[in-house]
Amino acid sequence: MDFDPALLRAFVAVREAGGFTRAAERLHLTQSAVSHQIRRLEEQIGRPLLSRTTRKLVLTEDGEDFLRHAEQILHAQDALTRRFQQSSVSGVVRFGVPENFMGDRLPQLLRRFACVFPAVRLEVSVSVCLDLRAKVEAGELDLAVALVRAGEGGGKVLRRMQYVWVAAETFEFAGASLPLALSPPPCAWRGMAVDALAESDVEWHVAFTSANQHGLRAAVLAGLAVSLLADDELAPGMTIIDDQYGLPPLPKAEFALIWSPGTKPRYARALGRLIVEAATCPQPAKPL
Image 1: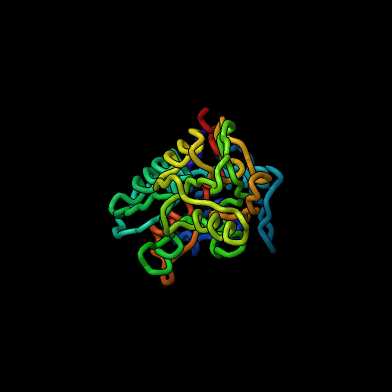
Image 2: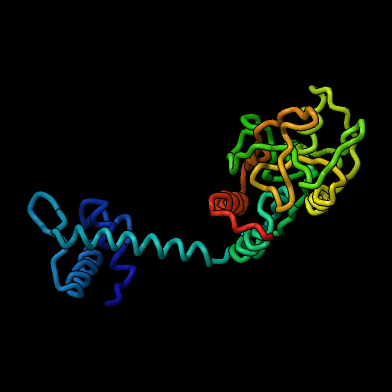
């Protein structure tokens, strides 16, 4: 039994408006047209959905059950329309995201956005070392996922994590200065490490610099240097060394979605919603 969505919308409108007259106003139809739609629906089902009295209009028991299903169908249909309906809206949205926030899922998210807003030009900055919060505040980006210390970022928190010092399981340190693998400045991630070390007595130097996480991980796994990672990002062959070499504790941090000041275009808000949705999905398994 296939139901015409127009009939379902008329039925839901009558229930929400409390009568045919107000439902007709909401649907921009005549009262007789709405009444005709409800009759067609009841004829198709073979049961009355509404009980009409001189004082009010109430749902029958079957009507109550039918309403629940009708609302679910209309909600799913609206979601499907929003997902695949293209927009003629044009403009530019500048988005920044850390390399280690979404990984391989980022291209899929951007493809979904481009399908809905094909006339909107995306300008995406992906890096582990860019200070994305500063770029947003300077007006160089419209929105960004920024790495910030816990509680200091504002915006919408997408993920919380604890940073730890890491080294290769085979790492051996016998010198006077601890070798570190860090991103080049400006980098919030590097800043957390340097600020923590400044409060300690550890002698250290930057032995390896890379603007991407693959290079930093390779340096750590090769035993060339110590670095810092979120505690859920360790790769096989790495170990946490927080209690060694006098290393200071590292702060908790957050990935937060932040916006530039001013009005947010509809397409920018849509990209923001996609980012929040992606952040709440389960993370895919990390490759070994």
